[in-house]
Length: 461
Image (cartoon, rainbow, N blue to C red; front, top):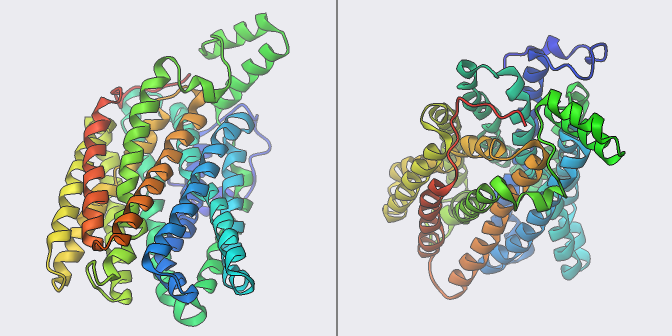
């Protein structure tokens, strides 16, 4: 990611659409970084503002987590649906659809209070539908992983250079902590001025830049080659399809839909293992990241003021940015699977220690919460790239989106469990111990069952 603004002066319309240069890959990396950053900005903003939104609409803690569970269910459906679509229309168009969807969701979220004022039931349904559309923003990371995995395969095909791919991708994926910091900072600055509505309006503005910059994105060579072979086969020109497949080094075995193929052959094991690990881990992500402000501010949690909780989120997410870089670098050396498993085990230990810390020990809570996010969020830079290289191009976006959506299923399960625990009279500390620390530990152990992939190898099929 070393491109300068001058790289974006003229769209690359004069070169062949079948050529991808190092400059194209660099520009794509920058655009994917900003697209993911602002998608996260909107996605995390809802969790950060949930206590304030709940107070504005008169919700109890249990009801707010119940609403978040319904929102998460809609997010999972939308995030999964975009995968097979992206395997059909291409990675470039998939990215632009995701960006536009996240922006629309932000703008519509700002009108929820007005709709809720007309009818509480209508407002609740409207909120769930709008935030489900925001699942397109969450799906951005799966599309980015599929797209950049293919683009990097051409720029870093040499084994010596291939070892850098994880670190470079971690810079793109670090949009999560950057977006999280921006979200927390915007709440701190904008909430006193215009309330939670203004925060969501501002969140939609960056999409204009991303959609404008998207004209410089080039489709990945792997997708174009696979589409060319599939088009020849569907048109009945089998001899030409075989010839092209031999030239491109693409297998021409029988293929059905991408959704069916992710549960067959060598794709089955990564689908089940990585998907299950992702699901379990997101139970913990919901507890400690998405609902972090609720845990930190609740009397039965760490009982910290809302302003101080935002400060903790800013500091801890800045720390998790370093976690992305570290785990991307480490994955290039000891393997991405091993990096993910070890980090999530350490994460569960850090959060367990934070829950045991005295409520009044503010510095200790900041340190342990930051360390927890370092080992929770940071490994996703290795996980998303590991997911992309675990599938062939025919099912890469579908497989990545399926696993990505399984995280939202985990969040749904976590939301149900946390809601039930709070409704039964237990504290936030107890709820996050059961449905945060333990699932994260289980996810770290389970991921070791995934097929190992040598980080020096490059998958071109």
